[in-house]
Image (cartoon, rainbow, N blue to C red; front, top):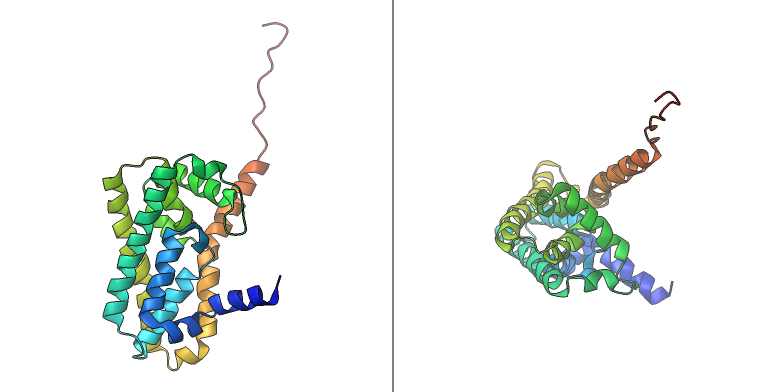
Length: 221
């Protein structure tokens, strides 16, 4: 991997530095890109929001504006993703893979959507990659837009407010938590990856289950 690319990736995942440098505006931008554009699936959504909440507790960000603006951007990003899927339809599935697009992500999102239906719009908010690809899948599947918006608004509020207020609460109750923010970020990353890991483990376990034996008719039948 080229050095400049390593440097860019390191900067992207330095969520503490991102929040300190760009404040609420940059948090809003990252959330919108992560939820509304295919290139945003690798962005640090959960850890970014928790970190922003910690800095809001320290008085470096205004928590009211943070909650309101980021929620709007999270919902708006999903709307963009939905309409991309709605207009592109099956073309998404025939698109060539690239560094920023993996067909497997789209197919996994579709399988998740088929299993959980409308609840996927809410559940996917808490899944890395899922919150990027589930809206276009819903659009490609022509999910009723009114139903999509209802689930999406609820999911947007639940995700943003839970993540930001978790960080805000930690910042208000744990002394000098901003000095140990790397531990908080590590915990959030592990927690955010656990649902996907559990889902993958269950899928693998189900594939390993032996198929039931079919009854063979006897010669007397």
